[in-house]
Length: 476
Ligand code: NAD
Image (cartoon, rainbow, N blue to C red; front, top):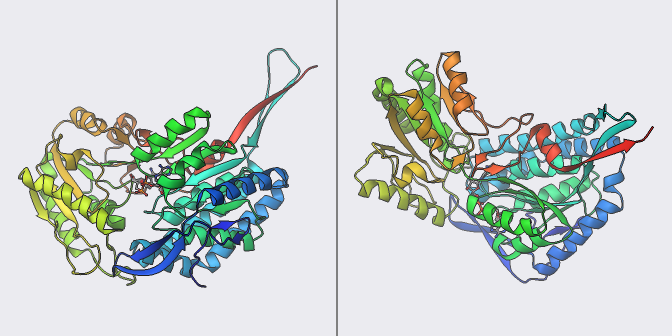
């Protein structure tokens, strides 16, 4: 299969009219390997109109059983093309190939979950006090704009597109400009799997150029966004003009809380990849580590040892655990934050350097002795950087955890189940794991508290989020 290079609209790759394109750069080699046309305002208009037509003229009224079949077919065709999609994803953003394969498989599982959910999701009958008969319907909204980031391009696209389609909506999908290939091929393969033309449109291009049009267009009923808090805030402001539905999955600065009674070996062994995985470009990265003081030295020693063993290098190699950052700009912004810690004489005990001459690589970096006001402690870094601080008192530690404006994810390590549950209840975060670093489960809701967002992806919660709830009363 050759790289797609045009927007996917109404079931075909459409020759672009903007004349603009984005060159895709392999972050491991710094070489251009493909070029994709960017949509202009005319393409966006055509895509939204086409999606609205497809909604009204068939998709919303298609028998649920037929929708189920199509979504299962999409999952199947994704699995058949797993290797191609994974290779493209790996090349586009420098993701280690083994991770890219897992993420394509996750995308297929998401389609399977929502294919099955279609015939198990509905309204209620309600015993209203005046008698008669009352029931609720879950109805699709219409055209959904799904805007996704570059760090997990394929799975995040799937976990918006699949529940939105399952609920009977049509979707206009906008991938990040550096990672459009897997989204475009999703449109093409879904059409081959039986999705009618117009039900899924894919618009590569710059968010700052077409974002406002997508959000403000009167035919777009909901905006489902994953990306930075800054852009999320703008989308929410614009959407308020049309009282549009929004769901926002935004930034994070997640805690990793290690109590002295935890299995320190296990916690320290797993903690490095919980922050350095995907080269730290992970909204759930456990980048603030809180360690009970009496086990601080033992924990740090093991954390550093494990970090030094991580395999950094060519994303195409099966053994690689950590690839390059996505771009030179991203590396600059991470390096600037590390420099801010070094100017404050914080202890940097590993990393901070560029391990290879070519590629946007940056070694995993561990920072100790930070203050709670340091930029590296407070800001989302989105690179391979972790800060580790000791704590003495549980209540004070929870206050520090909750001082962040973010509240997306986090882990608690302890063998005392009462403490684990007590802390889990107090931490202001949408997703938590106890004695684990796993944040994403297809069947469970995923999303943030506070400035990490609103609404939920995944699980049945996502499907609810793509419907309007209607109540119907029948008089006696
Ligand atoms: P970003 O906000 O720069 O871009 C995200 C998407 O929004 C891209 O498709 C981009 O083109 C588009 N966009 C940019 N400006 C826009 C505008 N004005 N209007 C509409 N769309 C616009 O984010 P990014 O750099 O791609 O991703 C990194 C961020 O995403 C981090 O903050 C990370 O924490 C967050 N993220 C959150 C989750 C989550 O589930 N909470 C998951 C992954 C990433």
